[in-house]
Image (cartoon, rainbow, N blue to C red; front, side, top):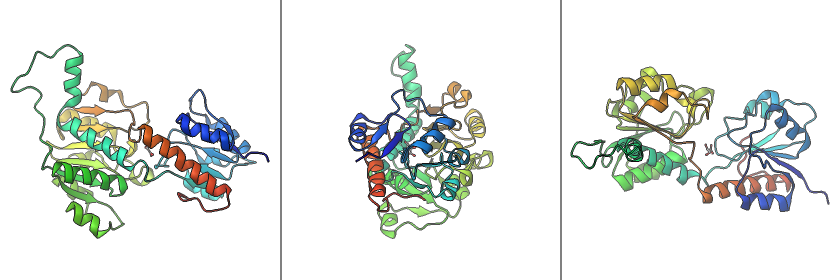
Length: 324
Ligand code: DGY
């Protein structure tokens, strides 16, 4: 029997690529260079499933290509703001993502950035690496204590809750959260002794650390803007492991330069990977290259999750992680 054809747009961990090769007639991306719009269109026209990820621009133009063979887009990632979901729906394409398996590792990176920013870890490492460290001193690189401080989470889904758990139970932090519509389960709120804020503004004014956990896309673009940064405490730190365009980078650069806030820890950027170069000259921002889910265990689990989703679909069942 002929194997189903699958196109994978980027390199995946070899363990998962091996499974893909065994199960499907698979086109891997050995060079790992992201596919352009024409290549993505060709993939939709020639494969039964296209396995995309956060770096692929799956626009309406791409999705509306004529003579599609593909029925399913298996996204490697929990976020899917790179896919025009309305266009996918209109084209009757199934889209799946990979929730759950990356929750803890992404929350770990948010916590790492919080600690790096509070304790000026990036500055300290630069000092040592540049050979400029002259030895211990009572006033060297004084940061801010984390234990017992207030963490405000914007968005309160799985990753935010995992971070809150680490921060509350590990660092004795007070947890505030803002979420526009859904109501988290009471036992989760009780376990974290968390307090819901009525507005983003309310949360910003009360938090020592603000961590962003909302989805990307039009509804949250520049949610953190100049006016909101000015509401934060001058001693506060902003952590973003969600999506770059949730924060207006020009406004954040002004905030960091002008002392509206003390620091920031960023894993995601507007226009990745071409972040605003002004960030590079600022000492009070810690910069990571979108590492949220990047552990061996998690990336393999994400690949397996995509495999399970397309496997269910091809077996005639509804995939577990169907988005549309
Ligand atoms: C996701 O899954 O959306 C992450 O950003 C990838 O690490």
